[in-house]
Image (cartoon, rainbow, N blue to C red; front, side):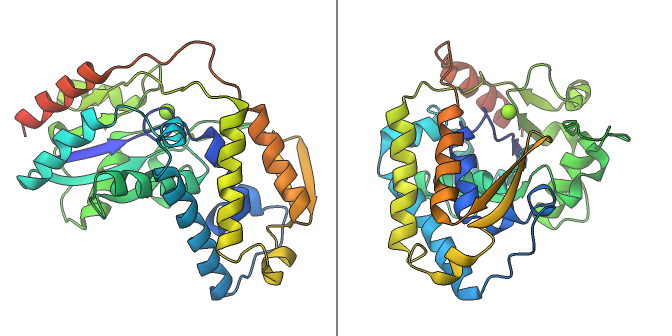
Length: 300
Ligand SMILES: [Mg+2]
């Protein structure tokens, strides 16, 4: 049985633009330890929570209808990985697919899962997502982190096995040689030490698509429209909530004070405009990915 783990950023797609949208509608993100440190708890009603969920869904569906924007967010050649994987699923050879990421924006993982499961018409294909904050990642944390610095957690064999065990609710951890791990990072994560034990570690070319200001503007417009259509924008509870009235920490040194929805929207827009379009074109690696996935599946 095959166990498949994906990194998020630059592996499954380019989420720098959508990361910013989390400030508009993701309670999970706004309440993470870093974002909530300077703010009161949100305390949202279940009605508003479900409106926000609907807004996120309307936005994701709009992306699915617009391939030009969709493939700025999502890796363009995911077919080379997911078509063989779904074949393996049909043949009952696929045990588990998870996202194992250092992102602090759980919203972008949620979006990636939604888009992929809809494109491949495979609900619940991705059964677990572990981000920077995941309590399952204690083996990944550095022993010491100097104050006001960011140290990227490791990705380790201990954690990846624990994640799969949790995802499959199994008593036993998977064998190392049944695991394939996709991560664009150069240099590789600590997990590379297990390649000699049969772990398949694939490094896709980092996905940095070209996009224009017009594209960024269109993505933000779709988000605005989704907030409107879900009734969030006319919801007094939302407008008075901790989304629209908060202190946003960033860079460990600066803070942004948000008072009201226009200020929030302006903040998100300014952050999106700062995101650079890549200097060099992304190099497609379709054939290489396909070959690696097929070779892995042959040995499962
Ligand atoms: Mg990455």
